[in-house]
Each structure stands twice: as structure tokens, then as C-alpha cells.
Image 1 (cartoon, rainbow, N blue to C red):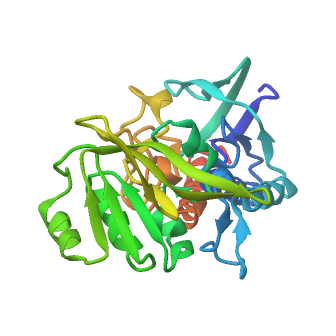
Image 2 (cartoon, rainbow, N blue to C red):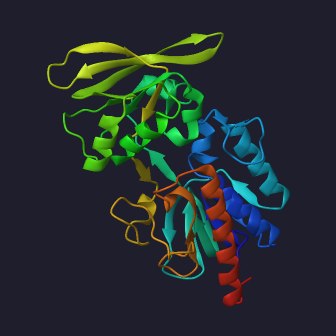
Image 3 (spheres, rainbow, N blue to C red):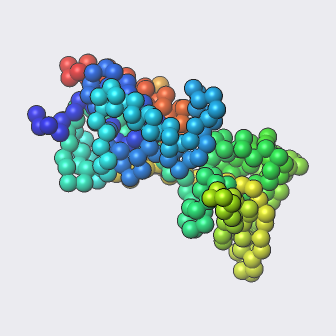
Length: 316
């Protein structure tokens, strides 16, 4: 077998991928992690992480992922900054192409995550993590007594807005149309909440902010009316993008079973996909929770599932 053959190959290096690597390494399975376009996953664009157990005073997202990477490397995992461009799961060992290198593996764990859909404006990127967020559960706590905007009109946006009212004194929902796509019960519940306000037929043209002593601070948004084109400013301490998530699974279309959105399907209670020996962990298969800790937990499951599968097939 070539030097590029592994018992377990992990695609993606967020909490799911690195936790899978940790468990696989401790089982002496010597995994390789192909880290992908964004080593460390979405946490690398997150500032303070206060809801990951074990860090009493919180930890910066990039620092958390750096610690996790060093931990898996300590146990012998091989982490490579490689972007996977092609997979062939039709034969064994599986074949994975990353840039100009060919890797083979007895089993594969997919942990490529999901990306929040964003507005794709420069100011949004500039203030991401500094007043702009795509996760109310992650960051809502930081907006106690403040005013925030929530962008979107589906169930996700209404869930985020409702959650944020636990902290913010005012939550304003911004939607490009005059009708919401959310379920009636969600809309009715929001309309009854005195903390939630609505701005319809509007989009965010720019995120407004400033820099003080090198620290970026979001101050609000420039809105544009979708009917007459007029613009106006709305003050806000935080802006939450809630227009959905897109799992990073385009590489596996036509190969692995996925739902209509693109989330990989797994056998309930496991991380097994429809192809024997291929497993999915983290946000790539989780449309419900999308938290670092749940991703890490499913990474642990995937490593154990893969280990058992390798043992069953006398490959461990």
C-alpha cells in the first residue's frame, strides 16, 4: 500500500473532524485530516466562545481550534492543509484527491460542515464576529440590554429573534418582502412579543460601524427599500444573519444520500451514510443544533463507528 494510504481519512477540520481525529488517534488508527479551505471551520471566524465546556472564562474561536489541532497532533494525527477536489467511493480502498495528491483510505469521515448564507457585502465580512453573527445561540448572550437586527423571514429567523429577546431589549426583524415564509404559529408568536419589531420590504445595503483603539464595533445598518429604492439608517448593536445554512456537500452529490437542502443522511442513531465505510459528522449532517459541542460529540461517534466498522471487516 502507498504512503498515502490511511485506515481513516477525515475530510474537514472543525470540531467534528478534529474530535474524530482525536478518538481515531487514541485508538492507534493513525488518521489523516485534510483540513480544507477553512482549517478549524466556522469557529475560526468567531470571536468569544463561552458555551464550550471546560473554559470557565471563555476562549477565542481560533484559539480553541488551535488547541484542538495541537491535541490531535500530539496523539499522532496527520493534519494537512489540503483541499479535497474529488472522491471515489465506488471501490475499496476509497480514493480521495486533494489538489495534486491521491490518498486512499479504508474508511472516510466527512466533516465538511455547513456555511451560513450571508449577504456577501464587504462591510458584513469586515464586522463578522464584531457585531455581525450568524448564530443567536452562540452570541446572543453578548447583547444583554442592547438592540439587535435579525435578517430573514423564515422559521430560522423567527426562532433566532425569539431567542434573542431573552437578552436584547429590542429585536427588529428585517425582511426583503412584505410576507414572511415562516409558519403561522411562529409569526403569531413573534407579533405578540413586545420586544420584536418588523421592517419589511427592506434589505441591508451596508453594515455600519467604527473602529476604536483597533476594535471593530457595529453601530447599525443602512437599509434600502426594495420597492422605491430609498435608504435610511437604523441603529443596532448587533446584526444576526438568519437566512439559512448551506451544507458543504457539493463534492458528494450523486454519491451520498442527502436531503433536498444538501445535508447528508445518516442511519438514525449512528453516523453511517448509505455507503459502507463512509461516515458523516457535525454540521454536514446536522440541520437542527449546529453547535460546536454537538459537532464534537458526533465526531466522537463517527470515530467509534469507523473503528467498529474497520474491526468488523478485519481492517483495524
